[in-house]
Image 1 (tube, helix red, strand yellow):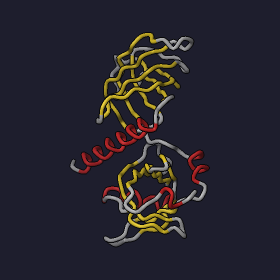
Image 2 (cartoon, one colour; image 1 turned 60 degrees about the vertical axis):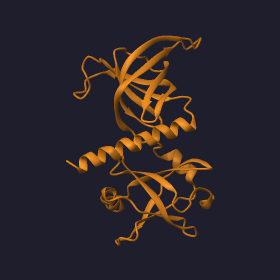
Image 3 (spheres, rainbow, N blue to C red; image 1 turned 135 degrees about the horizontal axis):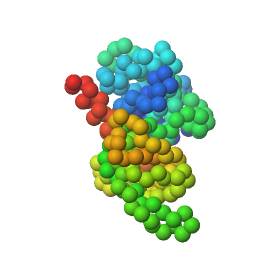
Length: 230
């Protein structure tokens, strides 16, 4: 990978941190303050709420993902924490692996965040592609790769549908494929919604993928701010 092809000073990053192999990540926004091309490092200056996670990650060998949106495309990088600067002027050096593509294949590509809102799921005939029944469902979480939602139908794995989502920047739709459905036994989900399904996006454009990832980070930042103010 050409280091300078992707990374530039002041470039905005969306950073996700997984601690102790958790399924959910802590997220924050940052910018590249400095570049060290020879050692393939970038210096970021995370907000105060994220610094504790990064310090803990140094000891536990945590996974850190950088979502980078550049003219060269969308790049997801999984670097390791190189060092920490304990001054107010410095931040955290992250070393970037040489074989980024291999790293992407081996590790998570998306972060799931809580996303509770009504959605429309339009079932499709797998043979003709014609629309069938329209279902009123409630989304439970969202990521750049798919979503989880609750509804009244026991949807079979492999069936296809169109999902309609309301994001903060407007409406979007995507074709989805159901991965799994199970009976709703969650104490956090309305019991009148008998089933919970997971699905992945099938024809998501790069623009809509970016919109969803931005939405996920926005929601996590808002959640972090609410928890800070409790």
